[in-house]
Length: 469
Image (cartoon, rainbow, N blue to C red):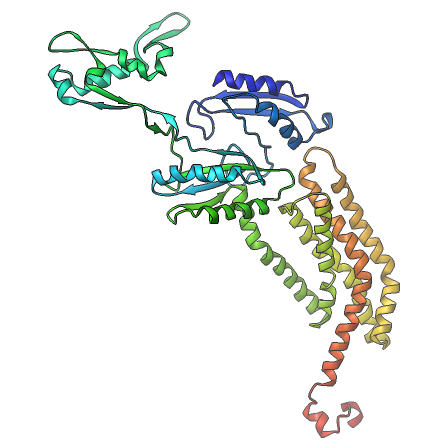
């Protein structure tokens, strides 16, 4: 394992964008066996390299794949880590069940199915169930004829393979432990068991171990068993191929579940970032709806109307469409940061409608203008402040969109969302808001004409009370 990791380290050291790295072999992190290891790689500052983290990973992946007998899974360290589970790659999918044999059977099936999905890459598993094993069956009757007990067999095997400390030497500068074991080249060879002899207490002669022990090397065993919630679990981790959204990958995995037809006793769940993404998808519509309802209630109280807040909120769909089109044009996912930008657009974009509708209502109530005249005058007089405020917000998002420094990958979706939403909404709402205002005004006027007259109006001939007085 050390030799293989050293070969990987030589390839990593040649990359021009890597500043430092370190590696360790053996139990580190969630690895519990010595056939695992870890790399810690630090890149040069962003202004000293042209490639991003994903570019460096994609560049190293084919070179590292040439090293036989070992696979290095790489992922970029996240500023915000969700789930707290350490895995070989970024996203995790866990199978959990009470029956370990069933879990060992279905884990490789899902692994093979995942490898056929074009949306996934760097697929790994923490299941290590194909380790070589030797099963020893002791013929107790034969051993008893030689006077050999089971404890003697156990002690002899531990002397050969258990690294038994038998002595310790102390010097002025150090201390040295003497370990009893067979030669290293014999420790991994099952045939070495046939070369072990035990001394018979009855005859005093050396008896081969194979005389009363039957060896079976046909079966395999597992090196370690992972658990989750006190039950055995198998975790499949994966990365996404370039251009693939996490939502698309989750749908593909759900399709694999339906195709394989896993038993009901196996519980399949996403973990870490994938689980947080699923939770956020489940609550996103409610969060956006709650924000719109709160805005509607506030505007309704300000204008003392049920209709005019709808006119202002009619500017929001164009902003959402513009944000999504901008993200799609530059190959960005609808991430949590992009969702924050869409929620910010709800507060930024509606100010266009507020500036026009507020002026139009004031002209109707104080100047006695008709709806057409008031909204036309509002468009003329409010065009300049609308453009000024929109350009201020839009130009403030351009540095986020064009940033290229450290951490720019996290800020860029926010800039693209704000700029795209403001561009499309600004162009459309100057035309659609007056139309919606006039249309809803006609609906309100029609309802008022068809409204049932009050008792006083029926008694006085539907005349205003001032004239009757």
